Length: 219
Image (cartoon, rainbow, N blue to C red; front, top):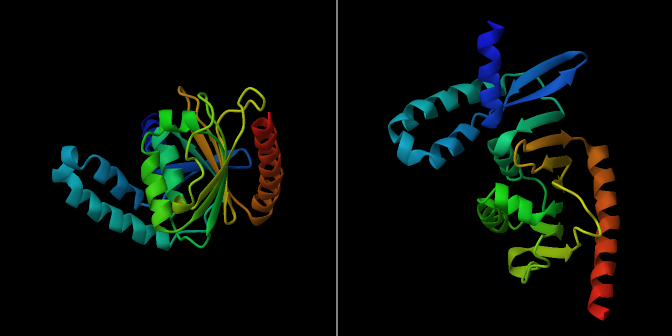
């Protein structure tokens, strides 16, 4: 029954295990990579230790079903904090890219996703370079640019360039995220042309952010 199914779908979306996309007037739902279940299990390992073996078996079964499934959609919606965590982990899945470019409100990211340092650690381990244009409520961050962490940054004032959320580009993927406390949401777009366009806009923003930094240091 719809009354029973829809709440279940909503729960799966909030946990980052299901996404949705529009097909005409219909909303279709797609199960995400079952390996994300392992992440959830590890986060709650102490609490759900007795259930880990049972759920791991379920993950393997779902992975088998996914491999025989149809072509995945190119646009996906992820709801809630766990949905955003799922998007972050996508950076390391089937990795073919060597660089990620991000425009972000860094204070909002760490407030909503305190585990961000784990993402950085994994990125460094995989030697993925990162270029970041960031705004921060408390101003520039000392050591934001760090060659040892393969990271180069430019700071922009949130007063001069007000924005919320984050835009991240890697490979043929673009991630749009809103860090609204009450309704965090992420959109994943997989398209070579869109990724190329967003990357070009990032390049313009990068040069402008560098110009603003230089102007500030001169003053």
